[in-house]
Length: 349
Ligand code: NAP
Ligand code: ZN
Ligand code: ZN
Image (cartoon, rainbow, N blue to C red; front, side, top):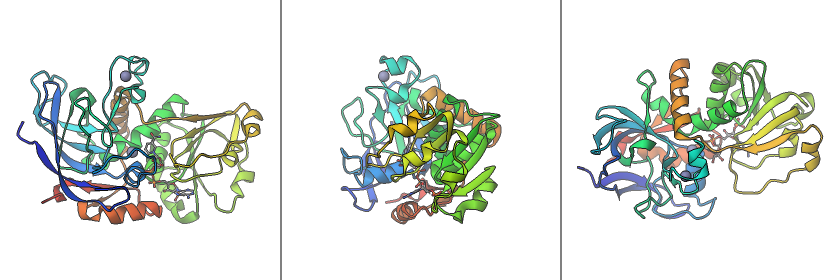
């Protein structure tokens, strides 16, 4: 293995701006691959964690779990990948392969899983994410990125893509189903494209009318702004499935009112605050309030292949690494169209 220390952008302490630094990468093990990272997406979860909004943050923190690049070295036992292959890494880089979740193909819920960053690897060392030039990962947790996809625009599929694909599949989005996506940000805009590609009728629920034209361009059938509240009367009882991607607290009960009988509201956004739920809003209509977290490795591969088949990638704004802190502020202001992606070639000494 030729690399042990690599260039990265890290937050040195909670809430601190990110700055260039060096981080170690483990020596290549027999089932590891070394990936030269080309692009890394900025997910709102990066901001929650850099700002320690979920607690238990470890620093320095190198965020980034929407990683694409090229494999430049493989361990002696690796058969799934070859040098020169395009590869992706998402939100987790290891799983135990033994627990109930792993055995069910739901390895995203592994009890002993290792997150791509802000976690501890099997070697006991901290994990560092994709705002970096290289990463060493277990070969079973590296995805194959289909050649037909634009590489930079494919990066956000590794988190935003699978986070929407998995619940859309689980709750059978497709022809005849009315799906609402709440929040047209990184997750939401990929959700619109995926739900459309699956054949569902898609409505975007956004705070204001600012993104109305974009929603139509992305493939949404309908658009409503939520700020004045009239939508909650007009569209009462409309949707089979609502995916809430909002990073801040929302009125859960108001959205439950938009579901049909037997409908499901899926929590995807992860604001740190608990949200009140009226039991009556669930009981009156046999409704479900559910959650969903990314997807397993096999399902993530299925999603990438689906995206290649249907021409789905993220709308991105490609940035240099020294723009990361400003990009965070723009994400916080819902001013991202629709995912910032870091060109990791700009992470220099
Ligand atoms: P994002 O790009 O910032 O998008 C969030 C969208 O939510 C914004 O674009 C905005 O859409 C809406 N929004 C923001 N603040 C709001 C407010 N105060 N009230 C109402 N709507 C508001 O973020 P993202 O990267 O898509 O991530 C969204 C959330 O999902 C984050 O909490 C993230 O941590 C979480 N997440 C969860 C998973 C999972 O596995 N479940 C995976 C990845 C991310 P409009 O402008 O259209 O209103
Ligand atoms: Zn993410
Ligand atoms: Zn497991």
